[in-house]
Length: 220
Image 1 (cartoon, rainbow, N blue to C red):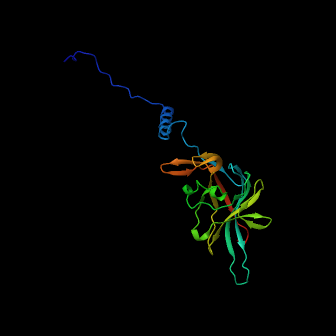
Image 2 (cartoon, helix red, strand yellow):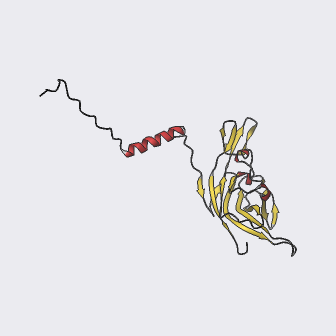
Image 3 (tube, rainbow, N blue to C red):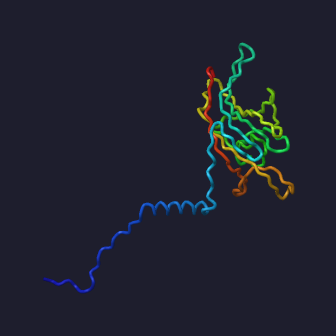
């Protein structure tokens, strides 16, 4: 019988077992590193719903509702007009008259705007250009484009529906905010949209993401 050769016997190595919690921690650290560190990870927009109130700096805004509005034709043979409306209660917190304005066609075009509707950075689902938007403030029953200081005012943003078009079940709005600041062109503080420089663009920051169910009245 042949004797085994001399030297120490090599034992098989045991596999290294990494606890699952450690894997989770390593993955989280890796994601954080990709985002630029613990202090630079972007915050998710604040989720809000119907009836919520948001401090936008320049404005205090209540998200009243989204609804389908029907305007009857003036004559018997005129077709009724149907709209999807976004309704807000807006208070201009500054000392000067502000404008209702228009939602931007693209979010990156909004950084220089100070109107209220200019802060509605993205409205989803998107409506075709021929549908609007149409914007106005209601002051004692009359339509206006002005928001007077410290006067709560109802603002409507509306889109016209085509004949037979079904309105969406809900609408989501990405909303920006404003802060007072100065730049190299203006020594005096002025209101400007909170934005972040990304490459050669200034991209407005999303302060809140608001979801509103679309209310439909009977016959709408």
